[in-house]
Image (cartoon, rainbow, N blue to C red):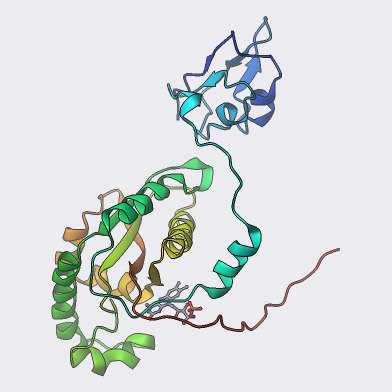
Length: 268
Ligand SMILES: Cc1cc2nc3c(=O)[nH]c(=O)nc-3n(C[C@H](O)[C@H](O)[C@H](O)COP(=O)(O)O)c2cc1C
């Protein structure tokens, strides 16, 4: 990212140097009057200089620091832990659209997910209407039922083959919505960024009363159907990276599960 366009409001700047200390790309220094200035083009746009400034003196990319999110830190860690413990995959959905307000919140949240080297070039295709989802479902299964007769399959698809052939939605689980994340082929962390985005999406969605399902089967099978891929409108510069289903859940869990605990090597 070349044009940091670092602007310093000298009436507010207290010359503390916090913006210089925090710049991970060594992109800011004091000028001769001890005000910060940008010195090279290595900025990758994290905006930490603006976020750390105690007086709101720094603007980058023409952004007004007064418009930044307020830090409230109101998330209770016990509540968060309970969310993690009780989050479940949802395979039963109400046949209704998620309301516009919630849909907006979900889409808006995606703008904040972190990416490696701050390479912000994820693309999200979100099926926002259950009728559109049904069209996609029909196209996918038309193709799959044709292919399943001829190509050998293994894993889950093998388990589900007969159910799929007899008309059951073992892949898209009758979900009313789907988010497909695709990633710029040149992104430095292209294997990780989309998964982080969906992890945030999943937890946030659950706080909004939605059910979600990571859908490896959709990730594997959607690309088999060119028609669906066209619908998804994935940029040519991007590859499909993963899929998550979501909607209002039609199942209520009464308790969490009990995990098999991982081994942790405690290096003390
Ligand atoms: C990367 C990933 C891919 C998954 N793909 C599918 C899938 O295609 N279909 C499905 O029914 N569940 C899928 N799941 C859900 C897992 O089967 C589920 O996490 C597991 O059954 C444990 O249930 P829980 O998520 O409620 O703890 C996937 C989960 C993950 C993390």
